[in-house]
Image 1 (spheres, one colour):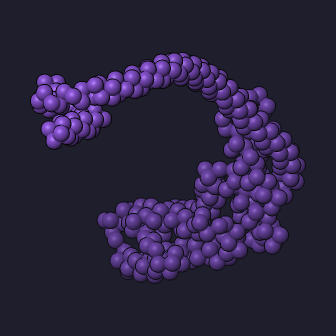
Image 2: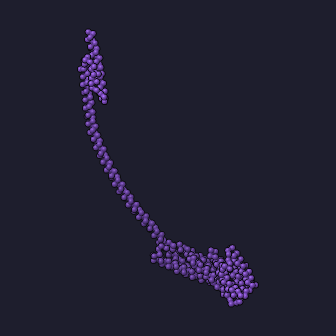
Image 3: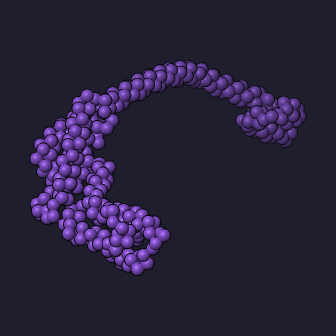
Length: 362
């Protein structure tokens, strides 16, 4: 009885162990699994074989379970593969669609860029056209103003209205400067010819008025004012005209001077009259002071007149001294030297401290 109980106990304990091992099959999946060791562990002796039927039942149950799981996994994998193919196909279709859209966007962008360039090109053409049109309108407006100004200038110059002539001349010169590059255009050439003729006429009339004024002992105030404006006209005509006018006035005054003192008298007599030369010049400057004030200070007419006087006087005195070299008149020579030095001092004061010398000829 006791032996039977012991066998049952041993069989029961072995069955429990086998059942536990049968349930714990995870280690079968390990890399170092050994079937022999596993079986020896489950059935170490003959008594342990009594639990074999129960172990086989549990093992078959586990196999069926594993098979079911494999079947489910295979089905899921099949479904997943089909879905993956569908997703891949959708992705490929999406990529193709996206690529097509990108290509379309690129084409539209290129078309837009082309249109923008065409628009910019048209805008540039319009801008150039606007600029040229503006310049053309401005040129025509200035041309119209120039034509009107030249006509008015002709009218006032014929009247010798130098005040208005000076104002118009400055305006005409400014307008004419805009057409220097249009000298080949017939109308511009015609206007330039008219302006040149007006300037030539003004030059002649102004020169006549000044020469006529220098011949008078007293010049009326209205004439002096007229000549003052005439100087502005001369400056507007050309600087060379100014130099020519000043030169003519100086030559006219010095011509009278030479007629008075270029005599056939004896050298000593000429030397005695040296002080009369300087007196004549000082009277010329003081007597005609209102006339000299007509000219702008920048012209330095009085200084140029004095310079001309000094050059002529130097030539006269040098000629006189040369003729007296063999028989010098020391007394008159010293007097002439004294008068000359005094006159030079007066001229230097008159010139504002500048150096004017008969010995240097100006």
